[in-house]
Length: 96
Image 1 (cartoon, one colour):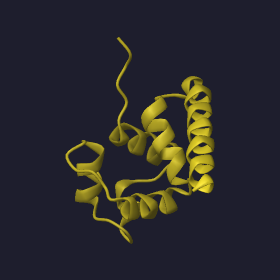
Image 2 (cartoon, one colour):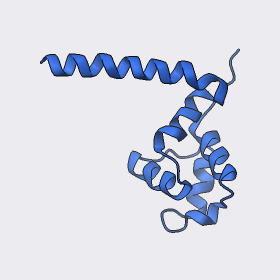
Image 3 (spheres, one colour):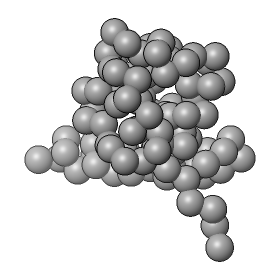
Image 4 (cartoon, helix red, strand yellow):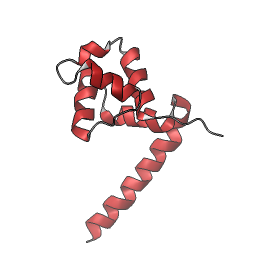
């Protein structure tokens, strides 16, 4: 069975890779809220996700890609799928 990856795990992974403590997010979030996110007790809005990513200096899609792919080895197929889906929806959108 494939290992399940979550936004909470991705958030913690990126935060630690950037050498940031939960307190480093105090301008956009409380430490308690960060802890709740990392324990998968709460889910951020897109706006909050963007703010958190700004602190970590990563694009929100980087965080979401890690959440869905789980690790670097699985990103190529995922990003290719996203590219194809974007092409499909933008072609349909421009045809209307």
